Length: 216
Image (cartoon, rainbow, N blue to C red; front, side, top):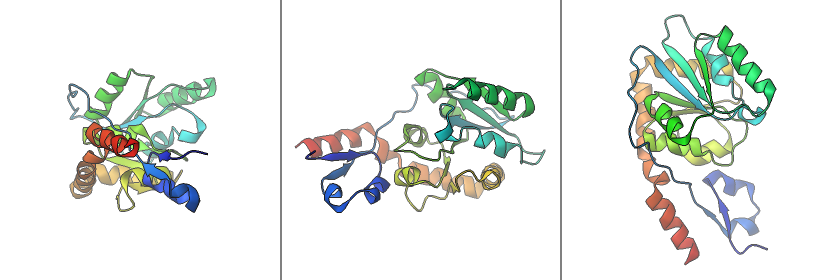
């Protein structure tokens, strides 16, 4: 019945019928970096996970991957997000006690989460399904490279040529990519360049213009 349909990323168009696709617009949700950036730690290579703890987010995948890193790695996983069920809080605390590379900081205010993100070297998004994750937009505008699962919701945000995808739930591949980002300056630089080139996609100016065009 709708005269227009909005989707949050381009890959969503592939899931629609021809009839619906013809009246659909892609409008990326915009994001802003924090007012002030936190100082980056030099003793650790901090990697951020920003997701509530629930099944669809596969929230402990980065923690599991960090267990496979060599002893020389300086990677630390900082996880911000609320446990939506008691079992997830228990799982996160257990992981913390058994994995020195993992720290769960629970739910944070939006500004605190952005501060955390902006000081880290990478964001990991390991979800098994996404409609268009705002955390990816926030990472991009902060200039933080993303390693994410190769699901359509992430591909539609970052583009098919983005070099930071890993297979869903593939712990070893994620571990390999984390270590490569830590030790291979060329690879990390390529991720940063890709993210830099995407900044305009998630700007408030771009989002406002998209809505204006649609409504007119």
